[in-house]
Length: 502
Image (cartoon, rainbow, N blue to C red; front, side, top):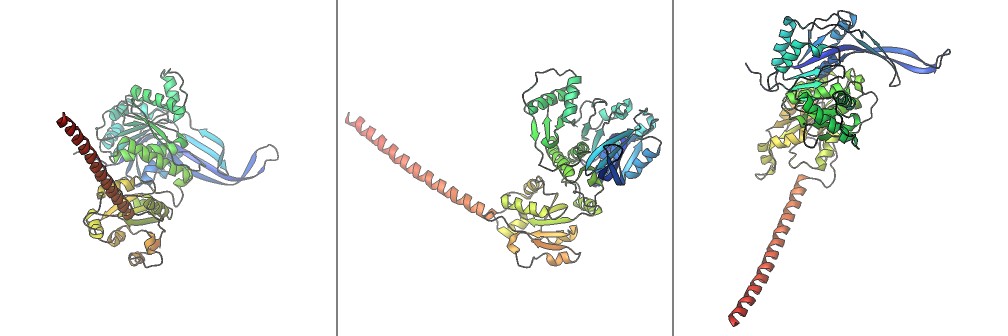
């Protein structure tokens, strides 16, 4: 039986490791050497590599299957114990689990210690690969997180990846020491340094361009063709990402400005988000836009520190993930759910200002959107100008909006009882007055608040202005037509008289 588009787990395949951060306070130098002494050390373990990608997806509320090779050692056991909510399919492996340990103080990495770097062999025997193939065929999307340790080179796994159903998008996050993506991957996601290295290694010898974008765009075009991929998205750090389909002008997706303390894992966040949105039916450029936004939010929230924070930034709603799953994911992390509502017919600057203000009140913003019938009852038979499906799509494209729920009643009270937000934000029309939905929120301890409107912005004023300008344009056109007709008639009459006189 075929799996509906967007259903099933996200399957993550690749090399896993154990990340350990030793964080302390550096308040003095050692007496015997000019090095800082760290006091009050705290160890913070987390899954690394493909396991980090799987953990991120699980934190987003997705069903996740991780296919990986872990050593039969303490580090491997710790990685698996950290993967809450992830189904792990272990591949037989005779090597140690890699451990990457960072020593940090004041938000800065002072030293990195790697162990378990001696490689082992991954056994691609029929039993494990058969289970992997079955999981991938029922997946919403497959993400390959290659960290250059041999998992992606197993012939049987590569054959399974090559034979994925067309409805299952494959995203490949490559590594310079790893294997080439299999042909037909929906999206390959190297960073800028990796793209340049791949290009040099594969013989790209074009003249050096004058700009960074020209350099990256040329390498991305070439890699699309070499890898026989559908698209390549080169991540550019604070510059966002460049998306190439192998010909034509590339698409550049800028990143929002954020303060970055620790960017570790940002590439994994990008790849996970891209795979998730492709699996939900988004086209590639939309998935890359969402991935850039999610990676920036991850970095702004503290990078790896946000994974264990009690109120991390919530995942973006994809349009197919049930809103209940989104809210449960935020609540599990102790986050605050904010909701607001309205018709949002002709989205304008006042709407955007209010939505951004509402999002800053918590960790997730749900917009309760009036359906077309509801708008007609409230605004009259000529409204809405934009149907609900399009209004929802525009709202979901805003980085401050995490989910949109359409309701058909005259008020959002029923949908509020379903999603039970912690905060309900209303526009400034209610300043100093009772908010109608406040009574419903009291049932679960929610709080209604009022946000000020941006003065002079409203859909009604936009429609009035458009109507006045249309009428003025019509009058100008009539006057011009009358004048032109009179002039033409006069000229024609004069010419006729002259011809008659002859």
